[in-house]
Structure formats: C-alpha cells, structure tokens
Length: 370
Image (tube, rainbow, N blue to C red):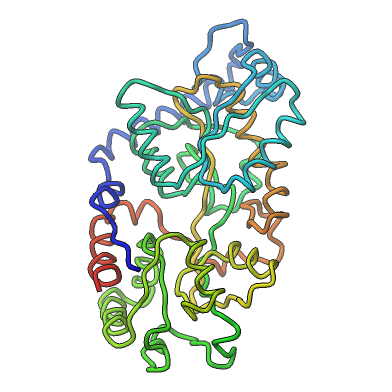
C-alpha cells in the first residue's frame, strides 16, 4: 500500500508573502506587551477588554483575573491532534481543578485542524479557543495571523527551541523521530548506524517510511549535505525500496506485526506504547536525533478568552506531568533530565516553511512516487 501527498498537502505548507508586515506587527505587539505590563490595564470580566489585552497582561494578579473571567465563560473549545486516550485525561484534570468549566474537544490530524481553522476564519467563523497540534501547523496559523501572542510566566520553563520568539504558540510535547524495528526479524547487531548502511542488500524489501514526514527528510538531507543527501535517498529507494504508509501508529503496528521489519520514521512515544503492550518492537537512532515540537496556542478571536488562557497555562504546567505519564515527552526542561537539549536536532520550522514547496515536492518525487 502506498500513499501520495495530495496537492492540498503541498499548498498546506505554502508560506504567505507578507513577512515584513508580520515583523512590523510583531514589533508592535512586543511594544504593546511592555506598555500593558507597565500600566496594569484593568482586565476584570466586568470591563470589555480585548483578547490581546488579556493575553499580554503580566500583573501579579494575572491568574486571579483570568480565573475570574473564565468562571463566567464556563467552557473552552479545544482543537487537538493529541489522541483522545491522551487528550481526555488532560481535559478531565482541567475540569476537576476548575469546577464549572467544561472542555469541548474536537480531535483530528494536524493538517485537518489547520485547514479547518483557516476555512472557518475565511468564513468569518471563530469557534476554537485553543489549538494543540504540530508545530508546523501552528507556525502556518501564525503566518495566517490567526493566533494570539501570549505572555505567560510558565513559558520560561520550556526548552528554548520549543518557544518561538513571536510567542504565538508554545511547545507542549516533543515528537522525537526514531527508527523502529521488529525484534524477531532484525537482530540488534545488524541495525544500521548510518543512512549509508541502508544501501546494504540485506534491507531490500524490508524498509518502511511514513508518507507525511517531509520535515524529517529535509532536516536529515541538510545535515548530510543537500546534494549528497538527496542522492543517497535516491539510491536507497532504487536499490532496496521503501514501503510508504500513512499514519505513524499504523506504521508501528505493521512493524510490530512483522509486515515491515524496519521503519525509518517513527515517534518514540508510539513505539514505547507498543512495547508496553508486549509487541516485539524496539527503537534506535541513526544520528542525528531529529525533534519537532508540538504546541499550544490561543485564537486571536477566542470566544472564551479567559478560559482559553487558563487552559493554555494548564497545558504548560499540570498537563505536562499527565503527558509524561502517558509516554509523551514534555517540553518542560525540568521534566527532561535524561534528555540533553544540546544533543537534539530540532526541525527548523520557519526555515522549512520558507522552502516547503521544494521539500514536499522532493519527498513526493523520491519517497512517495517510487
């Protein structure tokens, strides 16, 4: 079974041509943040205030004001790509802490979330308060000017590369790209240590890859040297082939079943969950270790702005431990004592989006259309 990236996927990553205007807006937003902090604007729910004023407020009574406003709003709408068996415990913990507040969840794949938000905005409809999804999609929504810059004291606890300078989204969890293999079909001593070793004939017909990982491909190829990296993957595909599947969970299930002995792209958290269930599967790393953050953001037109900010703060605090207990990798520095940030190779999200058409087309040509 092969899967092709559609034209929508290509257009999904198209950068918008107003960078200078956005930088000007960002500078104005930062200046506004300083002014709001200095003047201590009244953000109590009795006063009609903008989402920007609430989100940028940094007074000592910030939490009190947000909670007071949230109590009158009573609900918050969350769009997320987090699987429901992970998202529901987070929502329940939030509702248990803030009695009377309800979380309404809409769950979908990252690309469907960003497409829905953009479509709704084009129709003048603003239903979501908070979005938690892939950093690439969040950055695309930032470029569409649909997200609100937030100043939260909890942002300082995050890994530096999980917090973009514009602060329109913040990292919540890390997607760590690893390689996974079936332990009954592949011996540990035979695992490849470099991508060059994948040219060995022993891997003919035994390799898999996910159809939606062009950012992983771009990061690896650039690390190898673009010309050399592109040529190497052409050779791997030509000599040994790649079984292309859509969905990281599906791919891991196929590795566990033995249908695909080794996959080049897997999320470590999904492999760990499969291992816990007793599947004959494990993971390893062909350097470098590629990481892409997922994050949380508040809508610039949030229907429930106070509740949105309350959930945003919760995602950066209590929810981090819930995610860690469910084999997710939190973005907080104090919860990753065994993970050295300096050894992680973060996907250059703005850089990838700037050249998205090039990388998506190369991925389509070399990997998908084999």
